Length: 401
Image (cartoon, rainbow, N blue to C red; front, side, top):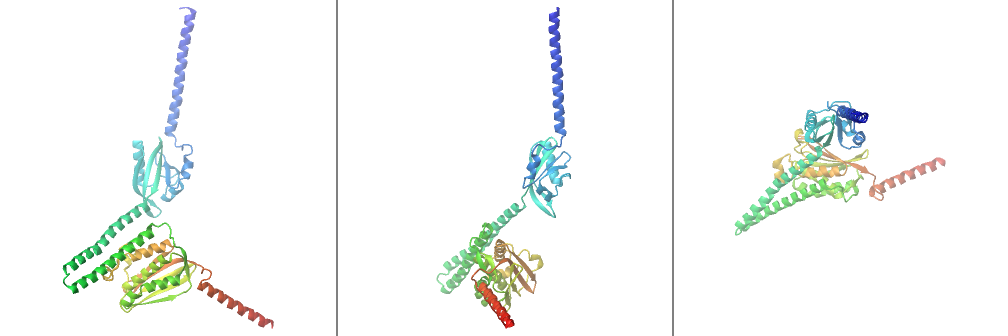
């Protein structure tokens, strides 16, 4: 082998050795980078900024389930950066996602403050050592869905009674066609059941409207005096029939912002409820008080009262404190629900005080507004201010003399 051939062989061997060394160095660098990534707990670029901008609770945890980053709402669930991930169910969800290397979703309960909340949690692996968890609170959504299911179920049940009664009475009238007295008797009962069905349907529609509407449409400055007077007047006939006196007392000239029809129906429902659960010869009082920017309308009776364990349930749809009395008076069990939602839609609240055998007081609280320009109360204030100004001027003149 001559010198030229030796040089070529040496060049090839050198190239092979150099290439091998370069390949080994590249493999080492890539292995080092892979190990660094797999062992790193550093967040990907921009991940922390995304977390801080999220409205939902979200955290990133490492392989030991330590929180390395968290969104602001996550703190409400006790998830704070630097601490362990709380909740056994949530920790199990993360482990499952890491084992399968795929996103896992679950519905579970987490503590938020002092209460347990129903949440939908999704765990996604974003690096070999980091897992992203996004938590969405679905408590209210589930509550609304449950209310909707209950509402449909209860409505169907309540409508069966008057519809069935109407059907039976129609058949009875047909069977007694040759007996005028029986026809009149059944026709009277049929009219009563039809009225009950109409009242139930109307109240269901009103309650549905209050629950579903985004805003009240007929808003204006409402005189509380007019609302109370109209509510009492609407129950005058049932009150007279039951031998119950309804009286009005308290402050005059109060105003609120709202829908006069909705507010009148709400107060009328409270008066009707008080009349229905009062004994003959007793009295129902409607009092108005204005203080600290709030108007209070209290309806008080001396009726049977409500046990403490049932007081929170009286605002539920179709709930009746006394089933037998409700059947006699034709109550639908929707009146107080309408009151609750009507008051809430006006930015107010309704409270109940009651003792068995001593009666009940329902108090509606609404934001007060100033009397509108040109109203009777506004004119009284101006007249009073003018008289005061006149007396002051007369006194000053007398002193000067």
